[in-house]
Image 1 (cartoon, one colour):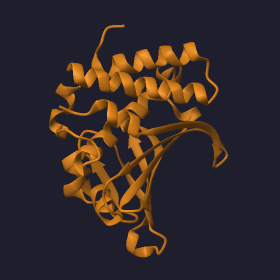
Image 2 (spheres, one colour):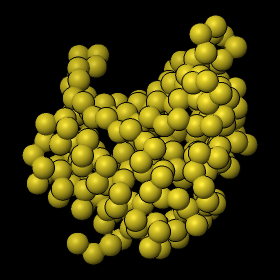
Image 3 (cartoon, rainbow, N blue to C red):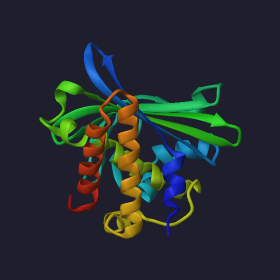
Image 4 (tube, rainbow, N blue to C red):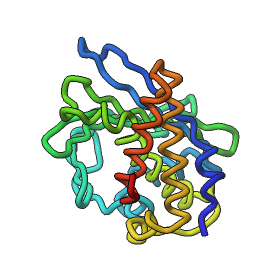
Length: 221
């Protein structure tokens, strides 16, 4: 059993259309607080053995300038890397390219100590002009956002922010269980809310959420 509702409520989702390096870009953010120290969370999101326990097996050089490859998923290059030991203000983070299916987007992970806990912010930037034709119109921000929700669920279970147990190997089968469907429904609706807050028409956002939910669960529309 996984505490789906607690995990969904623990994530703050944001969406904006911004100019990045002269290009109109969709900027998605997810934020969650984890009951673990900065060093522990940093290790969980930067070391191969820990990443494999909550996300996917990863190979390559997980260091500045190195190339990484997630098994069956994206690869890319580490563009920036600031470990906790290199700061004095209780922060850390890294920035990577996210290369998948011939496209390139950018992901930034920012960590900040919050008492004995750590607050994580994930930012995913995609140039609007680089998105596959019809993808945004059909799925909206949920296409990628719901996937990141799944990643934060895994990290939450790994770090004790969310009650339950679910290994990465079980995630695909779990998605079509009633519990899994409840999670993906809630995540898709969460991104619809973020899309409306960013100025989208509510009906358009609702249709995109339905399409996203169907994509992740195989549910009939």
